Length: 245
Image (cartoon, rainbow, N blue to C red):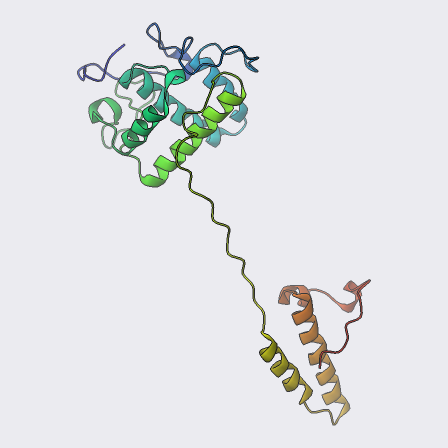
């Protein structure tokens, strides 16, 4: 296997994840993070077979499958070429180094595609990166790999997830948007409606309609579209509301 110091050698070229050839000790059969003494839920005995079992779940979704395989391939190549370790031996510290590597894959001649070129995976000039990953792409890569490691642990292939110790950003609950009139404003609305003219039948009809609509909107919290899109025939089984004015 080439090492990171042998810059003159081409990067390990792969056409598919199934065709990777490993030096002894790098296929993961004896990885230090392998789970032993349990009842594995997959038949995989090597890292590639385990990754293939994970990827098989996404075969019916091409975009997801391609993105997940891309990140698995990148980690597999980096782990075996740069660290000379199988994925099943990676530690938390190794993954911290990998996260920094994603921001600046060096040496570029080994890891980065020549600018402006896009070649097939089987081509000698193929590289796993088009350039340094932007922060959002770095986070997405780690999220995908965390999903992979968690699944391999649940499948009984790995003893633990080396990414589980990474700092997780707490998800902030979305602020609850509450729109309402305070008591003083609501009283002012009711007073304004109550002062509407009621001398003629037409004016009284307009007054009662305004009182009904404002009571409906305020007390039921309906959207305007919900009110406009329904007729009186759409109301049923409701509890009578005492007058608000």
